[in-house]
Image 1 (tube, one colour):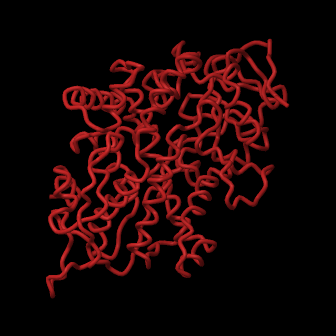
Image 2 (tube, helix red, strand yellow):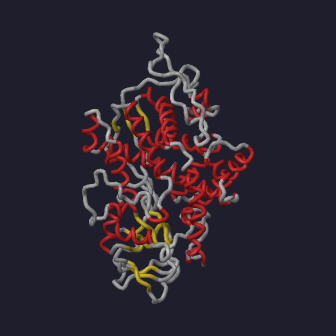
Image 3 (cartoon, one colour):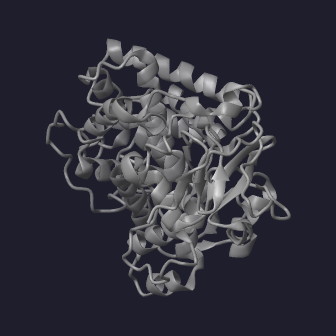
Length: 485
């Protein structure tokens, strides 16, 4: 049964947390930013649950909201967009200046003309453009491209016998993939990814990063107008929705936000489990890689986007005993709701988590995201089977930020592995014999790319001179950049 009811009482003062007739509990509102929250969010969620299924929080200095920590209440809110719409133009504290536009959380919460921040017909139009575009991706070609990109990255650190996986693998792989899917030149990629990371961190330079991100995406759109290709940017440009530049930028920010930073964190969080949790370590030592199970566990326990899905009630409303004022941010804690004590404990094979949202605003890119993450983990464990953490798991640090659950680093060591391809992308050779070091590269694929596949994502094999460097002119420039030359 629904638990939300209209409330005709006075609206709380602008910018203050909504309150309940039960009175303000000591220590509330809880802070969702800073090192203490990043280190142990579960303790914060436990204190919030003691208050109730919905509780007041502060997501940035002076920026107040209510946070849903109950699984059932989260579903109720996300499915009821009539009472709890997503459009942040209703955010009263932002409209009246109580929350300044230069607040570091505003770029992640402000209105953008895309399906995440709109409702009704406007939402349907944008959702249609994004979904139709994603449906043009060939999942088999996407998996092949992720495998190729993973091989490149492993070749860079594999011979060293050690790596910092977050920066050298988890972060770079989605960049390579989306560089290709967006049809983006490499000189734009780093700017886009760094800008998106600053937004999710809610760092002090988030507003400036947002401006640079928009400028970069406008340049990409202009490039694709001149030189369209089989890529996401070109497909959005050609869509019957006839999106203008502002709308195109917003769709790309949505896809970038859903596909790069969260996927990076999902890969990293899953690898942390596989390398530190005894439930998975036993399977790994036996030669079985429970990658799907690790991904599901990470999506349940440490979803890469932990607190988000912001709603703005159309009126004062009491939900689960907590009063939320009209136009006051109501956030869903996917991290807390997924770990609601009221849920059953056995999650094996259960994908009813809220990591990708629910209701009409559920993430439309969850299938490509899952392909990228699972392929990345599988390829790493296949190429580097004897990998282990170089620190105690308890010593791993987490990045502060109200929205995400993100490691700061994931250092590992392993017996050195030979590079699969040389710096030109051709199959590497054994220096003692001159033979193919891997002795397993089939002839290059002669299959022509289909119109529904990003360029360069269809290669299924290599021979000498047919590797990544030969197929993609920007490949060597990325290798040079990452090697610091």
